[in-house]
Image (cartoon, rainbow, N blue to C red):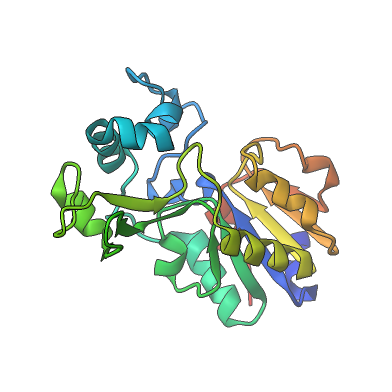
Length: 236
């Protein structure tokens, strides 16, 4: 913690890059751990259930899984989300790049957030483009349709879909321009997001994760702990 504090004190431009491990402290399960979403047995693998093709070919089954397993609207920002928002207000943190779709960084007060995989809080009609809230989707309890009759789709990146170009460009620009990159709660094994680390050319690379990552040897500092517990100890 002493080394991390020194790194943050010396930094003028920090970017935080986070994954599912950031939100587990808000009681949102991750994907690939022993207790993660993908460890459970389903009649159809989650990678198929959450695919672009499955959304259109088995829409009712998609939404049954999505509403019950992917939407955690009662979840609250945890210590990690709150500290990152505090770092941004202090002028230290320039951006958050997240693989999560829960919207908790924005709920905590972070302004510059690049949501690589979209957000459950944005939903739109495929026919007329009207926007709908996450609450509308959750309360429908089944496949939601617009008042115009069109199918509503979550603004989340499904398997088989590309990341949003504008979001990717903003995220890469932030990573390229920062002097410290803090990576937390991600195994850095999901591509293309994991490849974003290659664009960092700053001074300090900090990794906070409970398990090993492919970038551990390249890091200035590796901390094996929960992201929220670590970030909460930072003093401003």
